[in-house]
Length: 228
Ligand code: DC
Image (cartoon, helix red, strand yellow):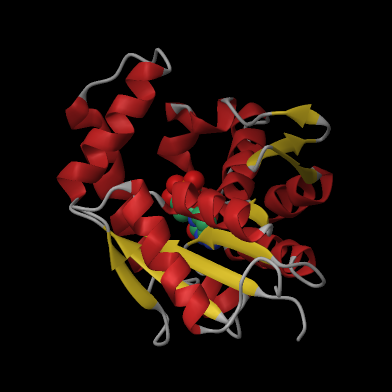
């Protein structure tokens, strides 16, 4: 069997990365957070005041951006031109601009190419919005995650507050609603469930229950961490 790809797509703040990391750890796969790539590009664009409507400036910026991943303890760390930016890309300025940046065709083409390269020879779990539809349409296992928007906003709010950000629950809710809207209505690879993706609604599921659900699906395909 060639290398195995597990694709996890879904709405913002649905717990995709939590499940993806847990699955990768259990199966000894590599976890890749594709959203972090779009976020790092957004950070670069913000820092360098790139005009999103200026195709040349966007193309030049993409040439100047070098991303790399470092996996430590199944946490995915991303560097932007050698600088560790894993924390900064989670903050609101990036969250507020990432959907607009990730709707740009040239950005998507570049990211998809890099993501496909990352999955060429290794067993990976990758989460995002278009992994099962566009990046790896032949992935052996696909999940599409969803949850009640209010629950999602509460989860993300608690996460941000714990990190010391000053923000209201309403602001978080608005940001998620806005990103869902942009992600599902954009022209380039909108967020949509792949026909063969298994739906996982985790509104009322604990992290452990979600992992069990996913592991059952993995087992149904006849793999385990030893054979994979
Ligand atoms: O998963 P996340 O919230 O960190 O992703 C940040 C943004 O990046 C999200 O609003 C949409 C975009 N994204 C995308 O368009 N395609 C992906 N494969 C992953 C993320």
